[in-house]
Image (cartoon, rainbow, N blue to C red; front, top):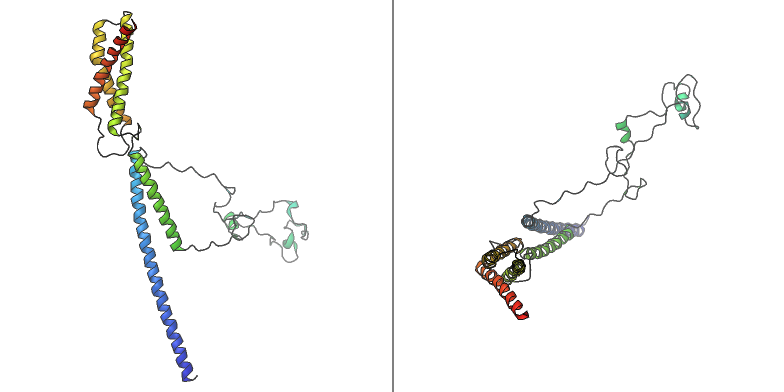
Length: 295
């Protein structure tokens, strides 16, 4: 080998060495980036899990329901139940008619037929039967999903970067749905698009209107002599307004409270008291005016 060839070979080896070092450095950087991305996704998934637990506790769900048990497969009860396990070979039934037609007949002294019936091979069985555990392990084959004992193809190795990108997109989608769930959880079930003040006014006014209907029923009962004047006045001035006020208070506390809220939402007690103790007497006054007008 000449000196020029030796120098060219040395340069080639040096270039290959530098290329290998660059490739190793790039691979190391890629692995560091993948590990950092995995750690970041792990932190995001942990935070999402904690937030989902909070949402579940807010709506009264402590843990997800257990998944239903999968139905037994077609090979249930055969072998050990592993997916790629094949059934044991069937053993020929015992008896005189169990020998194969292609084998030679026996010697007539009770020995089995087949290879055992050949001269010089007495007492040796043609098909030695294995125990059940060893028979299962005989001739293992990889069964494909299509069936038929055809060896299944190996799955193509997934790209870690692509899998991490898909996981990141799914985490972003989970964050978006989680934010929507939090916005919905911050709204009460009763009149969710209304402001708290408008909701309280509507609830107290509705309870006062219901109490006004009861006032009209009491007035009619008083007209036929079922209720005396003192009882009617007590219910109109104090009883029914108090019932309407506490009814609105309970309705706001039960259906006007968001699932997730910091503290107790306002119920506007002075406003509710004023509305209820004004609506009921006003309903009675409106009834009196209506009766006098019709007369």
